[in-house]
Length: 69
Image (cartoon, rainbow, N blue to C red; front, side):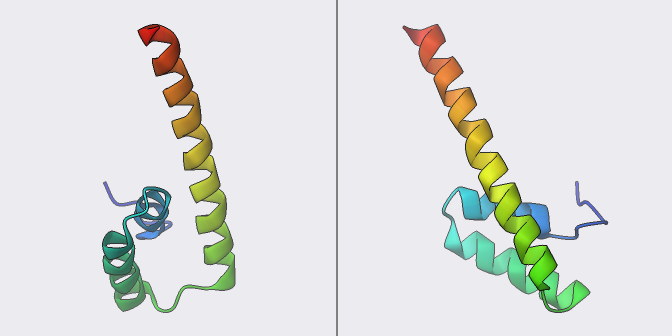
């Protein structure tokens, strides 16, 4: 399920949000090998995506807690 437009950037953001540095490094290396160095615009996109993922996880956690009790 690789997004060709963004390469491995979504995977980098997901693992960064999940605090998995080994996976971040792995997908960063793959991104660089396939598409070249990560640009500042791509880093901004990753940061926005990490923030979005964190917001979604908070919402999901809140919903789960409401259902549990």
